[in-house]
Length: 165
Image 1 (cartoon, rainbow, N blue to C red):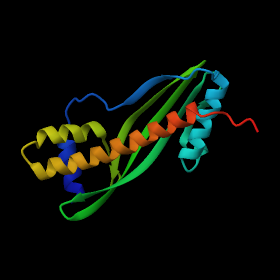
Image 2 (tube, rainbow, N blue to C red):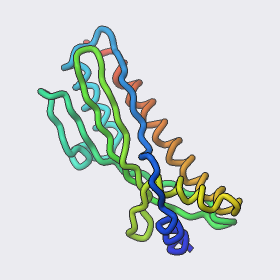
Image 3 (tube, helix red, strand yellow):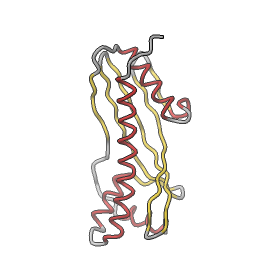
Image 4 (cartoon, helix red, strand yellow):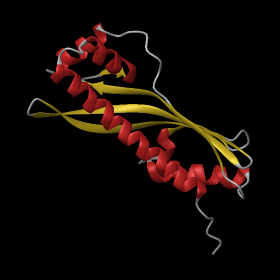
C-alpha cells in the first residue's frame, strides 16, 4: 500500500512552491551572544543529539543549521500507517533579533524521500478521490502541527529570561 501511494505521489509531482516556515523575530534586551546561546540550548533540548543534528554551528556569524527528524502515524482506511519525515532548521542571529527557517520537509517511507510539496501536488491531482485527498491532508496536517510546535518551542526558548543564579 505504501509503495502504491509513494508511486502515485511521485508521478503527479508538479512545480509547487516549497513549503517553508520562516519569520524574523525581534527580542529587545538580548544581545547576539545571548540569543546564540539560547538557540544552541534549544537545539540541545529539542533534538536527541544536538551534535548529530547540527550541520553548522558558527557563533561568530550567528548561524545554526540542523537536520531534524520526526515521525507521524496516519490512517489509511482503518489501518494506521507510520511515516518518518525530515527537515532543515536554520537560525540566523543578530543583535536583538533572529530569523528562523524550517524548510526541505520530506516524508520518508520505505527508503524513498518524498517532498512535502509533492503531497500538495498529489492532493490537487486526485482532488476527485476524497479518501486519498483526506489521507494526504492528514499527512500534511500532522507535519504542519509538528512544525508549529517546533516554532513555538524555539520562540519560547529565545525570549526566555537568562537564569542569573
